[in-house]
Length: 81
Length: 182
Image (cartoon, rainbow over all chains, first blue to last red; front, side, top):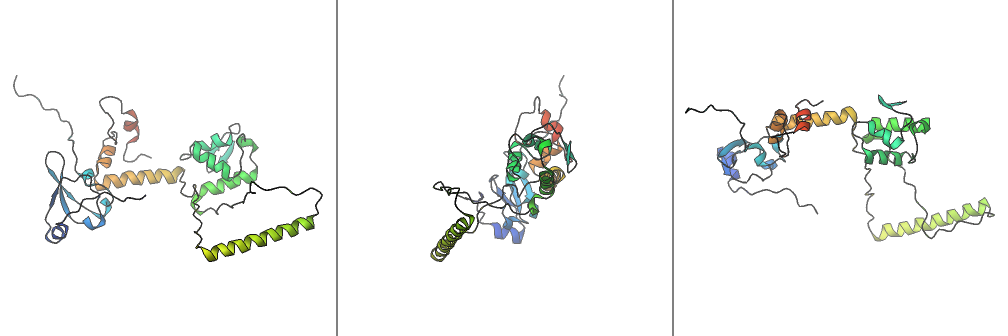
């Protein structure tokens, strides 16, 4: 049985395309559909909302793939002592 | 030594293992290839007929455009071989009669139901080997990197992509996860 991709409906999608308003979402597992192209999303990465602009090539991937949850380790010298 | 598409296959190896020398052919695919060209299980590379070698080369050079596999019908479980002293003429007549019966049955079936189109899918139609497969992998990595996904980023950092530990080891990923792998 073919179930199809998982996605979350965004009721404000039409408005976001016309007015270029970013959609704030926590649905990282939502598949990017062809009608999302050109929309700006603010995708939650567990801490804050990362801006993601959807392009044609991203169709079929998940929103969370473009909002990284880890940052690279950088060594900071301790101030005291 | 047998050379097929620039790959040297050892004479002393069994055909179904020698074929795994190709990049992109594992044991399963090698088995399917042997079945397709009717190469038996114990056949060594040196025992292959020239016809089989050329057939192998022509198939592997472009699997997607190769002619479709002929389908040979098998005898049913109730088949009884005719007695050996029967004349050829009689056998031919019987065969033609059976064929006519089969045809009429098929006609009836077509009239009553809509017969499904041939649903058989050639498992080796999508086979990609050697440079073609390498190019596909390279393109996939480049695509991931271009759109800026997590997978592409991990490839650029030479780190495992699917959540494996990196505190120690991760040797395979450090070796293989490159932006220009091949």
